Length: 348
Image 1 (cartoon, rainbow, N blue to C red):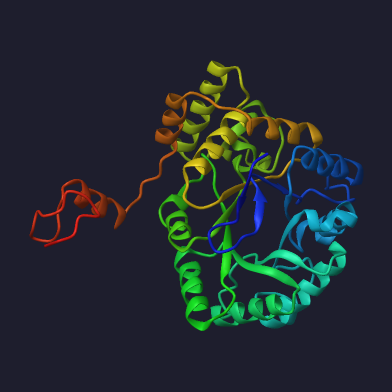
Image 2 (cartoon, helix red, strand yellow):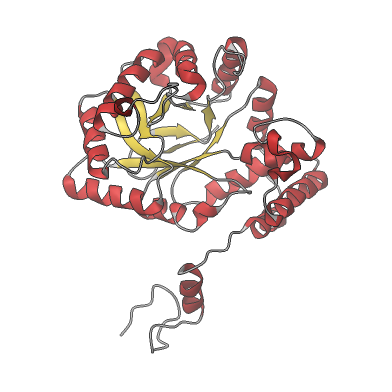
């Protein structure tokens, strides 16, 4: 397992992948206490140090079980948790959303479940469409100064809001958000348009969830297997491009003798190696067997032509203004003058 700082705005050291604990718990819908422990221990034995959770995973059981497993070695690990949602049957306005009130209430509850006095990174799970970003930033800053969190971040926020938050924090002298959490995989590369370039520009670390697209990239739904997308069956492949991506993953798996899981994660690790900021995939196994397969992918290298084939089949249409800008740079065009031979040549 290799390590890196979580972006360029913090010295927080994270492992090259994080263990998602959404399945940790004791209920019938969770992995169970014994399986959760087995996955935790295997991840730590492999050198993993970074764990991603949330106050709503398994109705809070995820944090409780993770806290038990961290035990006295808590300081050896990086714990990332989130707030915003609720598992209450009857929603109560004061205990949902991203307000300072709910932020503090949620963190105190999470600290109790995790059996710790601080978390390394704390994030609103989703934008609520109501709370001003200034309130979120000042609340996170207060928690940093209180020593209850080391850093703040933003999960599932659009690029323009995350960029604005980074700039506002700098101008206001507040503790800056150090990272974001987004969905990213061969089947979902929308973040290539704005979120990933934004994170690079502002030095934000990026946690990547759903790296197997809910099991889509394994091809299991084509065989009728169950999973997070199983109610949709074959319709889990929502576009012709997703079908082409799964076809290519399975083809390369056959050519290399690897599994589709390993090919998908190896591609993601390769993308992370080329990035200018930290990209940290979150693997969320339901069993020890799944985790062991995931971890083997981080030691796998496939041929450059395989990476190129996967890049091409999964590439998203960038749209406006990205396509126009790219065309202008290729043509060396600057307004009415053909003065540029590249994006960094000064105009004279």
